Length: 570
Ligand code: ADP
Ligand code: MG
Image (cartoon, rainbow, N blue to C red; front, side):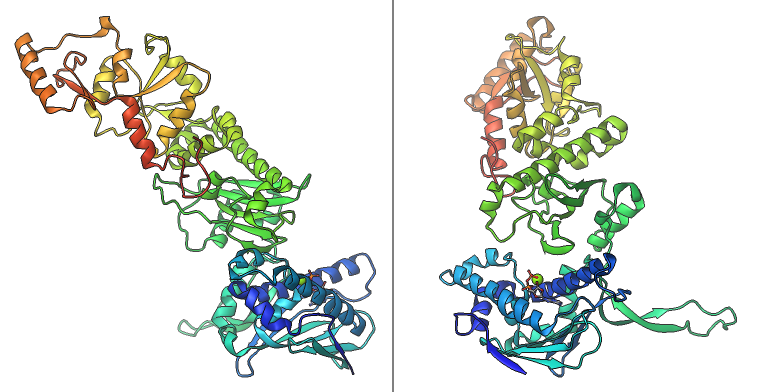
């Protein structure tokens, strides 16, 4: 047996690691299972290339909770370590990592925990929950097994032991104040959160499986059962497969795996798959969106090599796409940095614009391939598209080809089609195209009717952010202006010869006019008696377009960002 002192200058790493990582201490299990997975995949590789002459078999990783003895065991059948390797990889490398980490964060306070949570924590994260850690490991090489023990002080023991099966067992002696991790339910929760799609099967206990009844069974015989391993993960999730190997039903069953509580089907999906100049796979889903401003975000999960990292993809995908759901898996996203650094990172920028392009291409092809279906889905997806058009110029350009502008009667035009359609009839004195729209069919009913009676097209634009989008469209080089049907712009549009004289007598007109101008604040509204020819409207009251728009824009938070994050264009 040998003893030694781990080369760490700090007296006792255990309280330090605990202090700095407090908010994220649950990640110890993810880290230890990642190591077990790495060890297994390394062995697979070595047997594949003929370097290791052992049977690879069907290895799994087992997690056991021994509540009575306050221990957690993580057992793998991977490559294992010799005594020398423990010396090297655990005492020197793992703990030098710990030391570097502590050096870096020694002077910082707890509010940096968010950053630290993404720090590439390794083996030593075990000390966040354990007062003592043991490693019992047998290499695939023909060498005796080793037993390492450390209580978080810089002193460890390392001795030979008699383990004969290949692989590594990590034993955590759970600390007094971490006993929540001795509950099966808590461990199960962590396994589902972090390890659900890891590539090596992970066993946690057993479960009872019902078998089919034998043919000669009597009717009220109970169905036979058997105990089987409870495997908590799906080692080959859909995003790791080729799109050509997947059918629609595979995508929808994967959606259900990701969101077991979500009963509504997604509208469509986008399979991401690129390996140059960065590595990225994933599947994004468009769920049904409503106009509700409190749309749920944080639904996209970020993985690295099938290990769950976070469901906060802010800074990695553009803000408007955080409304989507699904999975992104990339080893190329640096995570041991702050979010603001992430946004400036070149690789991450490329990833973000790749995702935006893929989403735009997919929408374009859905539009081209089946316009009717795309129109049906428009109401459920428009909020994402319109928000994307507002916030991402590249996306705006592409979306101009498929973004739709429905009329109050349910005809869907693209922007080009719309302009073509109205150019003969709807221009103002400056020769600008005037695009009339309503935001509420019921409330603006009589204005809509009046405009339709004149043969004008009236759009129905009811997204909460439409005022911003209109502003953006008007700021393009073309001569286009939007006017809400109840706005004062409509005067400019209506040419003299179109105007029908009011059906009221002159006297009646005079009385009405006096009454109205006395009742209605003239600085805010305009009253017109003669502009409308529909019999039900003896007069109309309009509000200046710009005033109403200001109000609408204030409602959606002007420059404050739709979801209280990021920024809306000015
Ligand atoms: P990393 O995984 O980033 O290399 P860790 O601190 O997690 O860093 O682990 C340090 C090293 O210890 C690993 O690189 C590996 O060589 C060794 N190791 C840890 N766990 C195991 C295991 N279960 N089986 C074999 N080797 C392991
Ligand atoms: Mg590791």
